[in-house]
Image 1 (cartoon, one colour):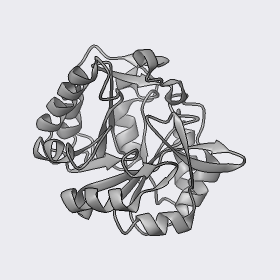
Image 2 (image 1 turned 90 degrees about the horizontal axis):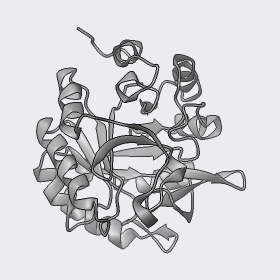
Image 3 (image 1 turned 135 degrees about the vertical axis):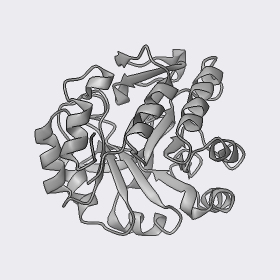
Image 4 (image 1 turned 120 degrees about the vertical axis):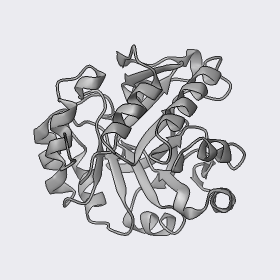
Length: 261
């Protein structure tokens, strides 16, 4: 289990938000933390510790008046840590090359692939042809409904008909280098992880999976290690001291066996 850092950008600012609160209308979100530092600051911090595989997420829609500044922040972060970070948020075959050329190791995609509630394999193949499987991460972020976890799109606002299962993971793994999975119902709450989701993901071992959502303590990290069979990587946002939380960044790195000097 390794630490995967994040840089979430909303309205041109690095933020930590409550995931389920994000709304395109009015560019609104319930904020846990708004940084005085820019995105490149965090990218340089992660580069200093040689932490790879983190994600830079653009949380504004392309028609938002804030999108241009959010994109500028994202590109500056990628250039500050070339080859170390992944970029997501509105990725398509048209714009993915720009982010890869700016230094992203991978692009992260959801909405382009999930259309009309199901996987659009034509779109997935078009994107994979542009990026290469080795540079593509599928974001399978989900919310719980009727006792199951369904993939959500459009910045976690829209349910699809695709339920996360080992069979779905098997099919999609042919197209992606990794999966990123936010448990959107607990994202930004630091109140505990989604045990059922974590146990399901921990049983599946074909490609790397990063889990995000609800981690607020070292006890939660211990649970994630146990329930996920020490197989899942983890993202921590609001709970980290660098984002206004109580978990010390360097202590997290040490706990997860990253070298701290």
